Amino acid sequence: MADTRQRLIDGTIETIRTHGLGGTTARSIAATAGVNQALVFYHFGTVHDLLRAACLAATQARVAPFAERLGQVTDLRQLLALGRALHADERARGNVTVLAQMLAGAQADPELAEATATALQLWITPIEDALTRLLADSPVAEAIDTVGLARAMSAGFVGLELYEGVDPEGSQTALDALDRLAVLIEVVDDLGPIALRALRGKLRKTTKKVR
Amino acid sequence: MADTRQRLIDGTIETIRTHGLGGTTARSIAATAGVNQALVFYHFGTVHDLLRAACLAATQARVAPFAERLGQVTDLRQLLALGRALHADERARGNVTVLAQMLAGAQADPELAEATATALQLWITPIEDALTRLLADSPVAEAIDTVGLARAMSAGFVGLELYEGVDPEGSQTALDALDRLAVLIEVVDDLGPIALRALRGKLRKTTKKVR
DNA sequence: GTCTATATAGCGATAGAC
DNA sequence: GTCTATCGCTATATAGAC
Image 1 (cartoon, helix red, strand yellow):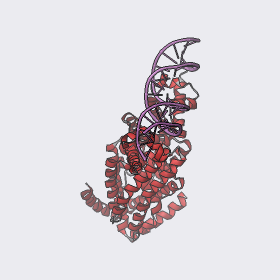
Image 2 (cartoon, each protein chain N blue to C red; image 1 turned 120 degrees about the horizontal axis):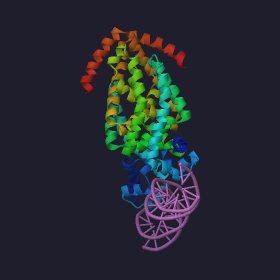
Image 3 (tube, rainbow over the protein chains, first blue to last red; image 1 turned 90 degrees about the horizontal axis):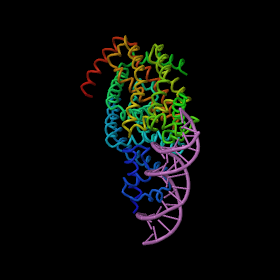
Image 4 (spheres, each protein chain N blue to C red; image 1 turned 90 degrees about the vertical axis):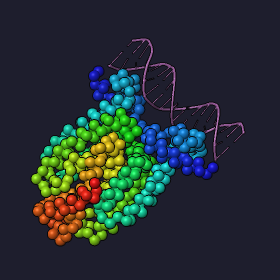
C-alpha cells in the first residue's frame, strides 16, 4: 500500500512524542505504526531520512491551521493568547515537542540541522507576517524588528515547551508574565507622540551603545 | 584516585557538548575522560546517574560567576547585554547546550526531568533576584511578575541556544530584536505617572480578559 | 511491497584478576 | 580502584522467500 509511508511518518511523530528522540528507533516506530520493521528501510532507506521526512510533515500539518488563525489576530495580546492556545494544543497533540526533540538532536548533526531549520522557518514566517501587519500603523514599529522578533518568539516558544516538560507549574507562571509584558508594548502603542519621542531618544542611545 | 570521578563528570559534559546526548555513552564518555569504561559503573552505578551528576555540576560551575556579574547590573538593557555576553560565552564553552540537551532528553524521562528542573532553577533564581532588584522602584514593577519573567527568560534562552545551533544568523537577529524590546520597557519606566495610569487601566482589562 | 531471518556492531552492565 | 573480558541485549541495515 502507498499509505504505509504515511503510517510510518505518523508512527515516527507519535513515537518521538511519547518516547523522545532517544527512544525512537526503527523497531519502536514500526511497532507504533503497526508495520514490519524492515519497511522503514524499504521506504525511507535510513531511520535518519524518515526522521527528517516526519519532522517536515508534522510541522507543515500543524502550521497550516495555525496560520489561518493568525490572520484573524488584531492586536499583540491576541497574538499571545493565540500562542497560548497553541501551547495548550501542542502539549495535548505534542507536535512542537517533536520539533523541540529534533532541534536538540540536530545540534550534533548537520543534516538534521538543515531539516529542522526549515521546519522552524515554517512557524516563523506566518508569525513574522502577523507581526508586520499588527505593527504596521504603530509608533513602536520603528523600534521593533519584526523579522528578529518572530524568530525570538518561535525559538523562545520551543524553549518554553521544553521547560513545560520538566516544570509545568513554572511554565504557567512564565506564560502569565509574558502576557503582562505584552501590555507594556500596547501602552506605549497607545500613548502616541509622547511615548514616540521618548522611544526615539532611547533608541538612539541604545543603537550607539549596543552596536 | 578521587579525581577519576571529576574526570568522568568533565568528560560527560564535553561529550554531550560535542556529540549530543544521543552520542553520549559509557564508552564515549570514558574515551573523552581518558579512563576505563568500567569505571563509569564503578563510580556512578549507571550512565543515567552520571548524566544527572554532570548536569548539576556543569550548571553550578557556570552559574556562580554569572550570578556575580548579575549583581552589578543596574538596568534592564544591561541585563540583556549580560545575557548576550553569556550567550556568546556559553556557545564557546557549550554548557547551556548541555542543559538544552538534558532538557530535551528529560521530556521522556521523569528522573532526568527532576535533575534538569533543579539545574534550570539554578539559573532562574539569580535572574529573578536581579529582576526584582532592578524593578523595585519602577512603576512597571506592578505590571511585571518577576518570578514568571525570570522563568520565561531562562526557558527562552535555552530555546535560543537550540535555535543558534541550526541557524546562527537567525539567532543573531532574534537577540537584536530582544534588545530593542527592552527599550520599550524602559520608556514606560521613564514616562512616570502618565504611563502608569495607562498601564493600570490596561492591566485591569487584561486581567478580566485573560484569566 | 511485505515478510522472516540474520549479519554486524554497539550498548549497558558485570565478573573477576590484579 | 583499575583493568580485561565478556554476557545479554538491542540497534541499523540487508538478504532472500513469498
